[in-house]
Length: 363
Image (cartoon, rainbow, N blue to C red; front, side, top):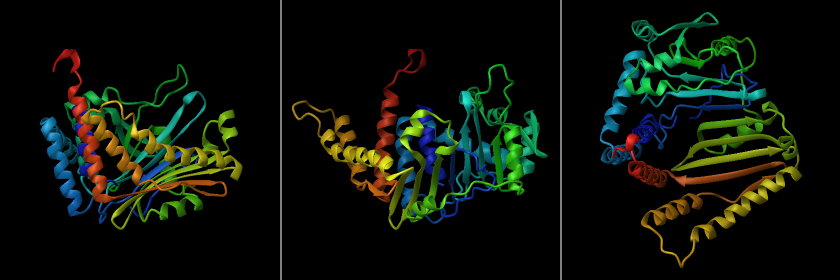
C-alpha cells in the first residue's frame, strides 16, 4: 500500500520530466533508448493547475494511507541532505537505455541530469561507509549501498536491487553511482560506466534519434518524454525477422492545453506494416462494443467507474494512420481531463490495495 501511494506522489510531485532531449553519453548501440527533458513552463507539471492537481492527489492518498505523505517528504529530504539534489525541480531530466544479448545478458545505464553537490554526496557516502568504485577515472560508489544509506524503507527496497543477468558462474559486477559533474549522475556497472564516460568526452558516437522519429516527436508539440526501439539491436529471432519490424517510437508532448501521445512503428515494407495497421484499427473499432458489456447482468459501482474511465481514455485516441511502411497511433487528452483520469486510476488502485490483506494476515 505504501509503495503505491508513494509512487503516485513521486510521479506527480517531481513532474513529468521537454523540449530538448540530451542523449550525450547514451551508447548508440543500445536497442532501447529513452530520454526526458525539463518540464519547466509546461501545463502538465509547472502550472497552477498542476499544483492544484498535486494537492488533490496528496489529500486522496493521505485519506487512504496517512503515512504516505510523510514518507515522501522524508525521501525528498534524505536525497537533498545526502546529495543536494532537489527531486521536485522541473529541470531534472533522465536519459539512458539498454540492450539484451544472448542468454538474456543485459547491458544498460541511467544518466540523471540534475544539479547536485558532489562534495556533500562524497561526504555522505564516506560517513555511511558506502563502498567506493571507480570508472574511467571518475569517483563512484556502490549504488545499492548508497540507496540503503538514505533511510530504513529504502534499505529494505535496496535488498531486492536488480542486477543485470550474467553468464552462469561469472562474477556479478556491482552497479555503481558515479558523479560525472555538477549536473550529471550516472548509474551503471563500472565497465559500462567507463564506456559512457568516454562517449561524453567524444570517444565515440552517442545515440541520436533518426530523422523519421524526430518528425514524429516534433508533432507532439513540446515533447517531454521519448522512448525509441531499434530492432536491428535486438536479439535476432525468426519471429522478429518475419514481422519486418524495423523501429518503434513512443513520445509524449504538450500542444496548447492538450497532452499528445505518438506511438509510431516502421517496417521493412508497406505489406509488412499492413497487418498491424488493420489489427490496431480493428481493436479501436471494437473497443466501444466491448465496453458496453452484457446489459442483462448488473454492474458494480467499481465496474461502472472503470468502464467510464476506459471510455474517456478511448475518446482521446485518433484513427490509425499509415504512410507507406509506417504505422502511427496518435492520442490527445485535455490536460485537466487527464488529471481527472489519473486521480480516478490512483483512487481505484489505492482502494484495491487497501482491501488486500496485509502480510501475516494483519489488516
